[in-house]
Length: 244
Length: 192
Image 1: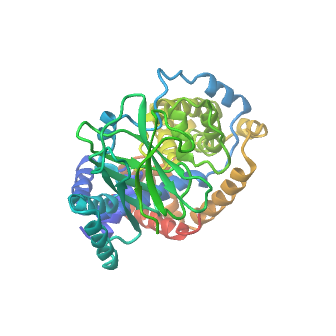
Image 2: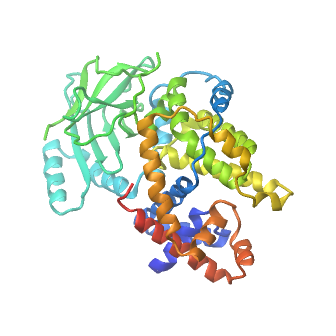
Image 3: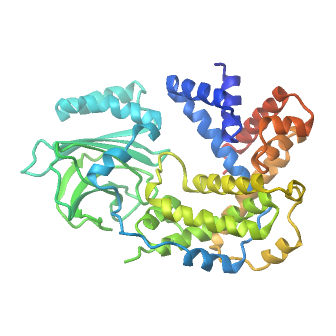
């Protein structure tokens, strides 16, 4: 598929104009060329911006109260992030930008190696430009009871999303959760990255989006908190990465 | 306890808080999104009353599906726009009075717009500035490209319907849409 053909299919797809055959062709192409998802994403963003091009009209004042009154009550207040068994489903790599997924796959395999070796491998990859625009951090255990716990975090500053892959960290009881923190010198306190729990084997792949924009992710840390999470870390720190 | 929401709280965070049942966060999200979504619905439907219904349905859907929202897949605003457009176009397609669809916003819309919803002034200023940039870039597109995109995006016409409306071959319509969106994308790059 030429670039022009890809642009055409992406543009038409964005506007919902593709017939079934062309849609399949585009999806097949994207499976084989995941980097081209960026092309589709950019067209999609552009199309959405069209919504802002129309003459702006304020909604009638009474609409907001009608909307708020019509919201159904939540059956139960979910935690800040999915529970462990759900999280493994939610963290579908289908929707993780391919660069992030590819990089995580790349460095995850290195988790079996010593952290020291892992760090040197990451430095080497960074020098090769293989991890451009991505920040990789290795988190080590600081808990005596789980010395083998470790994690690797891939952070995409441009997209403001990241993925944390954890191993050998025992799952916590239902009333507790692990909470991820991102230390950015711009803020006085670590920024909340959401809560998660690990699976029975101590592993989890957790996709996160910090609660505030991150300009400089210096350190990633995981603490043990209440299941709904906390605004400032209160519990013991269990995993932490080295500073810059 | 509801979380404190400020002007710097991201859309994604508001949606995440909404997923947890925080109606204050959802109220703030309404303030940010309702104006462009209502405007889009009016543009598609050419009818303010129907646009109100659509926007109400959209926000209820946003509330109900907030726990399923995947930030890696789309931005909250992108998601909201897609829902709004789809719902509005579904209504358009279900109408029998096709001619009425093509009428542009009428006087009652102008009257309604006098009663402005509460929108944070900083958000509003940013949005107005962005909207101006987008409008300018859109208007600068060649008319044939702009028309093809408008028929697809705002009226929900299919490729063949656009080709028939414009009396142009299908290939020409596709090329116009591709060129128009590509040009718009390039003109907006780095400006918003």
